[in-house]
Length: 278
Image (cartoon, rainbow, N blue to C red):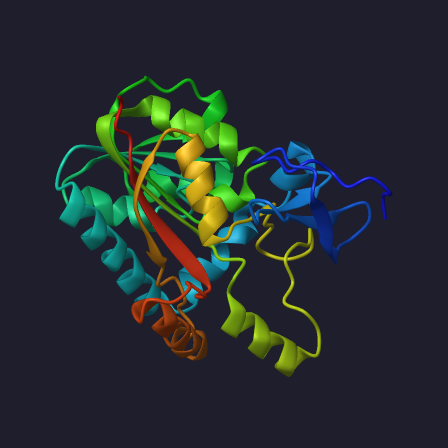
């Protein structure tokens, strides 16, 4: 363990502490000031790229197919209720499932994907979509171009999500809509049940798991990150992203406190924000 705690990458505060000792040299820290959780040091881009090959997407095609399709339909319904037409960019398009429902709904769809294998899958599934391979901040997309930007569980995987938020603001037209879903570090019910069933804390980071999460947001830190990037936050609420029946039930129970005016403790959260220049 290092003797000096790292500076928080969001608020730049020095009051950070270790919350998970992962595979050396990686440690997950949290900031007492803004509640952000983050991995330090960050894995290199080369190390991360090896995790997102063809095998990464295979389970999405085989497990809980109907539940996943319903999830994507809920998400496009939410988008359509807020912005019914226009250019839509999906960041981290994965296997193209959301791009497909967005194109079917009439949006002019573009997508980004870090993985060449994922980009090829989006192109196969949505021939009309324009797919950009690489990190969002390196793509040089046109400014003030998109009416809607979506990011379904992408930002927690990025080496610099805060630079990416600034880039989203740049490429959104004035008044444009941004929907961003990420895991919730305050997923207290799921974390409690995991500890009871597994006998160990809920894991946050590993290079040997399917989901490599480099950042761990809470509702407070997510709102702060969006505000610092220049967005007006309309809402932060439950993201119904669970597809396994047991986990869906647990997450539905976890949603009750917020529905009653209490804290958001679901497994994941969805922020709806807008870029409103002064």
